[in-house]
Image (cartoon, rainbow, N blue to C red; front, side, top):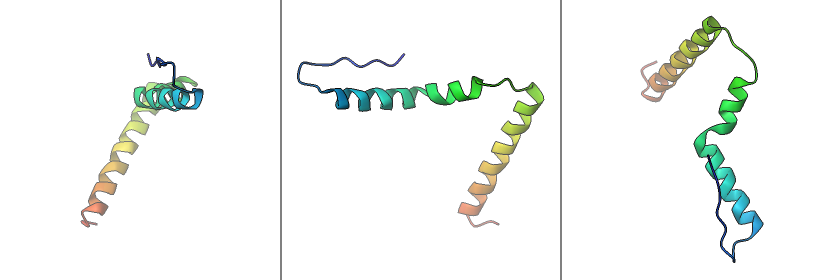
Length: 66
């Protein structure tokens, strides 16, 4: 769980930036968005396969094989 400990000289903006960075790194917001609506296992599997195909095509384009 992300948390920020402040020293006496730290200001609020600094602490907020640090907290946002920790939340982003922990992946809390993406997990929250993923859990907002239920997806059936088949839909989840198809999305995962589509993402893998997309990553592969991007990799091949980068290597100029397509």
